[in-house]
Image (cartoon, rainbow, N blue to C red):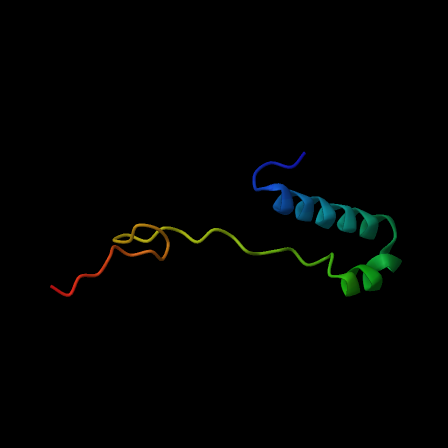
Amino acid sequence: NVVGGGYAGQSGAIRHGIARALLQVDPDFRDSLKRAGLLTRDARMVERKKPGLKKARKASQFSKR
């Protein structure tokens, strides 16, 4: 079961899980899975909202006068 995220994020998590399961079954798969980039976790996460800003990086509109 995969919880959270969108379709692409969930499919990436499933892909990562299957790759890790294959590695537990047969460690000889490691080099081919590593070359395909299936063993590295996608570490991108949502940036937190900062105080004084509307979103993580969006500030309120600046007015000179």
